[in-house]
Amino acid sequence: MAGVLEQATKSIDALPMHETVRDILWIVPAFQTVHIIAVCIVFSGSLVVALRALGIAGTHWTLARWQQRFSAWTGIALVLLVLTGAVLILAEPERELLNALFQIKMPMVLATALLSYGIGRQFRFIPAGQSASIGLKFGAILIFVLWGIIMGLGRWIAYAN
Amino acid sequence: MTIDSALTALGQMPLSVHIAEDPVLFPWIELIHVLAITNVFGTILLVDLRLLGLAGRDYPVSSLSRALVPVTWIAFVIAAITGSLLFISNPITYFGNFYFRLKMLLMIAAGINMAIFHIWTMRGMRKWDTTPHAPFAVRAAGLISILIWLTVIMCGRWIGFTMAPF
Image (cartoon, rainbow over all chains, first blue to last red; front, side, top):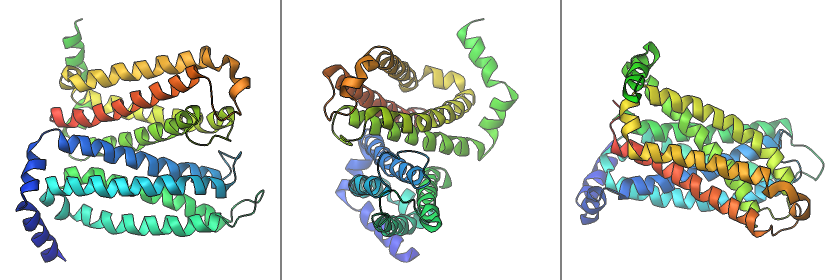
């Protein structure tokens, strides 16, 4: 795996686009800003769903309704995260691809997105007026915590080099 | 006492020196700051999109506000505390940074926008609380809030690119 990532880093380094993206000073902070805004949507969405699952906030709508609303937003935000993340990798491939925290972060993103999708589907089957089971409440909190850890890994990539 | 001497004194406090010199404390505080600010913006965005009539149109504004404002405030207090800790680790450099100053001014502007909204605009809330489309002043407050907070996040990111932390 390390060899593949090293090869990918070398290939990206050889791309003319790499130098352009790296050398234009505003590109990385601008894309990082969009990246953070997309993170805000995913993270806050998971927080509101978790609070609703616990019956603490947003009780005017059913859990299924909240989930339905956020699944579309989360999907759009995840696409934005992938696109902006790709530009950030293009700018600094060594900093990202060869970083151990990045290598932990990426499978975690995939696993959390899948878990989020799976648990979200379960929320839709909860009848109105009925609260979520303990397992689903735990799942909602877990998703929020996992997105938080992923954010933490993303932030620590800057310091782990 | 001049601003420079006050900032110097702030930067020489034992806690400031500790944050600046500890190899992991600054990144940890920064991480908590980012997590908190993410939830501040995310929850504000939900309410603002509702005010604009772009999302959650059948959710009463008063109920949405009641549900999310406590979360926003908790996150904001955490962001303010952690932000202050980051600031005291290098106060002179932060204070001299354009994007830091802009961020602080925008946060004051966000506070004024929120105060105007709560004191004046919300007076007639009963008329538009459950309607999908709110009056112009309400939608304007929502749009201004989104634009301010987007720029706050942008400034936060640019601070990192225009100054070395230590």
